[in-house]
Amino acid sequence: MALLATVTGFATFGVAARAFALTVQRRPIVSGFVGYGISATAFGGLGYLVYGIEQRQNKLLKERKEALTANRERRLVAQDA
Image (tube, rainbow, N blue to C red; front, top):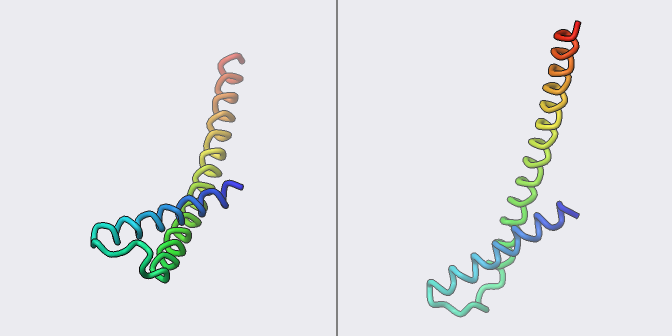
């Protein structure tokens, strides 16, 4: 579900950015539906990449936390002995 939400959120932002760009250019917002599709696809792809990066970082953080916890436990056992 999180992947779908991330990609959809980024795609929605892309559509909003396209609408804002057309507004700044004082062009009709409904012109150029192909541009909306390209923008949604590009930002959706970016969202997919961000989701993958986030998952890899969470995995690395989990592994690092486990290593630090194991080191702490070994150090406490060594102090008690």
